[in-house]
Length: 140
Figure (tube, rainbow, N blue to C red):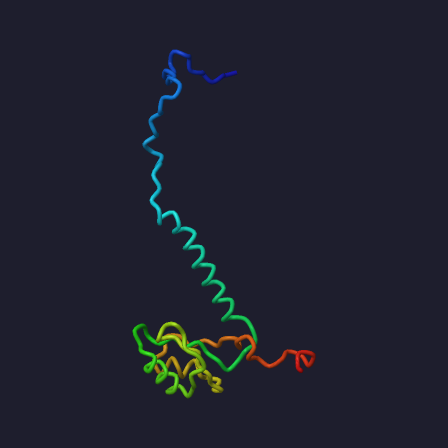
């Protein structure tokens, strides 16, 4: 049976005196870079929020409202003009001028909005409190 050869005591480096500082391994980083330490957490946060946004848009009761995204740099007036050209109306505006919630009863509104120049037009569920009651017990 082959046993591993253990180093002899004379082959080991000498012990450092008590209280002496050891040299750091150059392969191990000991300094922290500050903001870079938070990048993985920030990336996970953005991915999670993006996933929640996608889940919100793709689920829920259908409504006559659509999320419309005009090309970047579009003004609010240009975005509203694009929605009007697709036979829709403005239901709500977003933080960015190229994003709006449009309201239209046309079944082909997303295609008409894309034809008018929108980059994205997807149906969104009704906002909380704006949908009809789901059962007679919820009415007053």
